Amino acid sequence: MQTSIPQAQHYASLTWADIEPCFQELAGRAVTAATVEGWLADWTQVANLVAETYSRLWVATTVNTIDAQAEQRLFAFLDHVHPRAQAAEQGLREQLLNSGLQPAGMDVPLRNMRSHSEIYREANLPLLTEENKLSNQYDKIIGAQTVTWQGRERTISQLKPIYLDDDRAVREQAWRLGLTRQLADRDAINALWAKFMGLRRQITANAELPSYRDYRWKAMLRFAYTPGDCEQFHRAIEQVVVPAAQRVYDRRRQRLGVSSLRPWDLYVDPLGRPPLRPFGDVAELDAGIQRMFRRVDPQLGAHYDVMRREALLDLDNRKGKAPGGYCTEFPVAKRPFIFMNAVGLHEDVQTLLHEGGHAFHVFESELLPYAHQREVGLEFAEVASMAMELLAAPYLLADEGGFYTQAEAMRARVEHLEENLLFWPYMAVVDAFQHWVYEHADTATEPANCDAKWAELWGRFMQGVDWSGLDEEMTSGWQRKGHIHQVPFYYIEYGLAQLGAAQVWRNALRNQAGAVAQYRHALSLGGTVPLPELYAAAGARFAFDTAIVGEVVGLIESTIRELEQARA
View 1: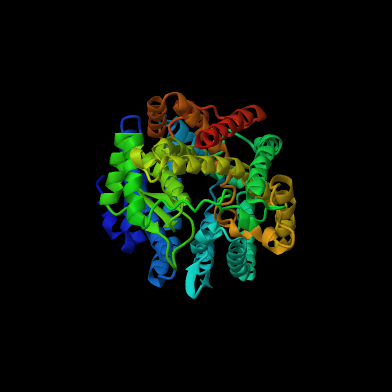
View 2: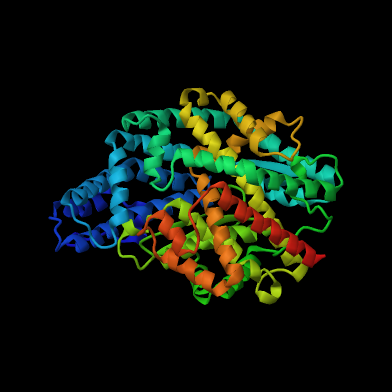
């Protein structure tokens, strides 16, 4: 490329003046059969720079939500660089599509470009920027939530170990304390919700589509399934998984010896065993996960070693840090970055295994030459993460590199499989709620109506836990699910991917090495083949009907029985 591309290390001060000449040169070139590969390679360099700049600026606001300078740098990029880069990208998409060329390995990326082009509107660029800013404000509200417990300030996440206390009164006190603090922000989140909804209605109108759901379906590149298929999945969950989840809840209730299961009873060990404490600090977590990944596959272990050496992990929980966990990509460096909030529980082990799967996706697909080939649907991206949780499960034993005795490892595996069963009904609530929101956008702008719909769906799918006397805490659950606010419609992917991951695990029960090899091959394909073919490459079938759901649920329940019998 004749125009010099700015150095990635200067991302914090990158301006549109630095990047614009690169886009202008690309737009000025003739795209022919002889030049298209070089043109795509140069476009990739520029696209990677913009993407990495955004990722690094955003990461800086999540590792410290009270860093005003980090927020200013992100907002400056969102105001002055990102919309112009998006407009320039759209021009390049049109240039390639109008050429009629079909470069090798670009069939699916070209299909994606056509979808992006269909919904692109210049008028939406400032609205999308404002949406990103609102998302940042949501993080700030959640990140600032702390309580005082036993004289110490704690984040809401830092209350989780207390939910494992054998004393039911202590658990209830901590649970109510956390929920009271979260409910104190209802008005602030409701105010943000009205802004989100207003922006999304305008984005939809500008794109000339019937609903925001139609817009998101195209934006999220959902070609392999429809909203009707989602409803079919919801019904399969209602028919097959809800009864299985009730069986899990009922075992817990009986073992705890209580007449009804309350929300603060869901995390304590029902047999009165002390909480699993896999590590004392994040250094121990980090080292144990490294050993486990090496046992899963030496090359995957080597990938994780790179992340440790290059400080690509932020694992501990602290005040001012955004909630949750994620893995993002720095595409210029060809590196992933993992963020989480570890507090010393087994779920931290699962989170790091999960995000490690996303990180391996980055490493395994890095040889693909064009950025456009690495755009992977979340329905498969989450297979990469969820399958890793299951593929690594045999190595939870300390003797295998992990953290636990044999009895503890079996317990951890049972708890994880039970959590998988319990997740699907919750996923159905979140996904069905979002379909309702954007099919009834005017009604859903009023938070009270959202509360009522959430309660209705909760009653349909979340059976087995007694929420009596906790109406406000239950109906406001949609406010505490960040996906609903920040990345609408991004949730069913977890449910679909869990079905895919369970099939990878099924294969691993027969042949661990073979299943891992298929898994790595599928990750290496990036987004170069359609979604059903990615699943097939991983040894799974992309489906969500009652038959496949029943097969997977049967496998999970039978494995739980086997593990519990062996433990007994």
